[in-house]
Amino acid sequence: MEKNNYLPLSAEQLNLLTELSKSLSPEQLNWISGYFTGLSAQGLKLATISENSHKTYSFDPSADTKPIEKGKSLTILYGSRTGNGEGIAKQAFKNATDAGFDVKLKSMENYKNNDLKGETNLLIIVSTHGEGEPPFQARNFYDFLFSNRAPRLENINHSILALGDSSYLNFCQTGIEIENRLLELGAKSILQRVDCDVNFRVQAFQWIADALNVVKNGEGGVTSSIASSVLMVDKDESTYGKTNPFRAQVLEKSFLHGRSSKRQTLHVEFSLENSGLTYEPGDSIGVFATNPPELVDSLIKTVNLSPSDSVTSENGTSTLHDALFHNYELTQLTPDVLNRFVKLTDNDKIKQILTSRDLVKEFVHGKDLVDMFTAFPEKLSVNQFVSLLRPIQPRLYSISSSPLAYPDEVHLTVGVVKYKNGERDKTGLCSVFLSERTEENESAPVFVEKNNNFRLPENPETPIIMVGAGTGIAPYRAFVQHREMNEKRGNSWLIFGNRHSESEFLYQLEWQRHLREGSLTHMDVAFSRDTKERVYVQNRIHKHGKRLYDWLENGAHFYVCGDMKKMAHDVHASLLDVVGKYGGLSNEASEEYLLDLQQKRRYQTDVY
Ligand SMILES: Cc1cc2nc3c(=O)[nH]c(=O)nc-3n(C[C@H](O)[C@H](O)[C@H](O)COP(=O)(O)OP(=O)(O)OC[C@H]3O[C@@H](n4cnc5c(N)ncnc54)[C@H](O)[C@@H]3O)c2cc1C
Ligand SMILES: Cc1cc2nc3c(=O)[nH]c(=O)nc-3n(C[C@H](O)[C@H](O)[C@H](O)COP(=O)(O)O)c2cc1C
Image (spheres, rainbow, N blue to C red):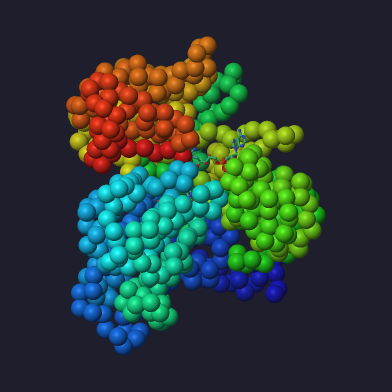
């Protein structure tokens, strides 16, 4: 292929591009630039995109001669937190309806558990969240299923699509547990459970087609032909989304910690102008980052390969250096990589580690791929090496601005991840990409991730209580800005925690202004390391328990955002104590009180 001296394109490619660009409006040009950036950020080629994201494996009722028994009933039940499972469930519902099933689509959140014993054909789509826990939306169904009240389910034919992420230790745990419990209760699996990793689309749509075929034809029906004619319904109606992120320009960056702090939090403002992207307070932004160049170099050296080695993978062909820079996770070591490493090398020590979750957890803590290959040098070919790696994933950040206060902009509050492991200084992929490798006026590929499970009350006069530690304050900045734009607004109470008041009081001046102007009516803070005895947000909940209980009794909505591992559990425990103490309730009744709040969407969490 003849190449132009100055461009990485052949003359033929250049001609095509020039011809195309002549016909494009500025908006179309902008869209295309974001689209190709997205492809490049994910290492995808156009052919892969069109195959995988626009092709739907639809059930084709005309593919064989057996008609569907009139009104054959089917229930599609989903438990989804970030919307992936919900999108798949809706697609399954559409395909099943088109095919003539008498089909019900139900979220586990609103499902009447007593209906379970009446089901005959049941397709379940459920994700795993937390550390191997059901998403909140599945909790009600999950608890019922595992309770003594769960009925025998011999009448049910089921299949499960489990959504997860193999970088977590408890991959697809909830789907696995639900399947085991259904079998224990006598239900019959008509199609093997499918466990989906982060790139779930192809598998999920294949499962829909297979499952509908089996329900229609009985076992063996899975071999029926599958049509691929329907365009997949995307979650996001904007032209930009996870598969084609928008290149958002950085308008402004500032660091929020004072000099004396050993850590840093970045405040970054992006422009969304001309993107068509919209968001509400409570939503997140996904950001695609590229790897630190020095880590790419160090890894190539450690595995004894050359940066110019050619790599062929599902992403196409490129140099090893470019593939590592754009396409793969390098900053953390995850269990899925260890599994592939053992399959390829039969390494005894890693095999031993993989026998126990605790050993895996301990081994991967703070490590990256350089650490693994330094400890276990294995001679691999370049393609073998790349086959071990995990595709790069976008990172999510809670939006910290209101679109009413900042139209065409979106703000994020990013904790900068830096730590030492042994002798090596480590940096987080995306937080440091934003803080150190993306300057003002440069751009980054982003998309909006909707979160309907973390929303302000519809009535702006409803009181709100917002609890957050560290960057968990982010969505509350959006909430309070949003309410500020409303003339009628109810009381609002922020309980914020961090380590030091002097250097880590995020957005202090803004909160003081809101308090002065009444857009925030109450604020309590807990700076854990200012005093001898450590004080956290949960201590503030205890301290102001009476007021908090009164607010809840007056209809307040309660929010928790930030650390999942400790804070969210401790806040929940404090809340139980407060409700028990001031409501005069037993432990069980307090649990029910909080469950009721959750079901009424008056107790919402956004934890990570
Ligand atoms: C819905 C949602 C909303 C979120 N909102 C925000 C937000 O508003 N602000 C925010 O800052 N983050 C937020 N996050 C977290 C964010 O997505 C990233 O996970 C975070 O920024 C780290 O990503 P990274 O690429 O910088 O680090 P990575 O490259 O992913 O590295 C992080 C990993 O480094 C390791 N590590 C980190 N510190 C240490 C240590 N001290 N010792 C040993 N190992 C360590 C851990 O394995 C950790 O998982 C949110 C996450 C979710 C799911
Ligand atoms: C905070 C958080 C925790 C998660 N924990 C797990 C986990 O423990 N195990 C797992 O397999 N997947 C885990 N996942 C991945 C989700 O299951 C995966 O993203 C899934 O596609 C989400 O589907 P949903 O949008 O329908 O909820 C986690 C995701 C997030 C954001």
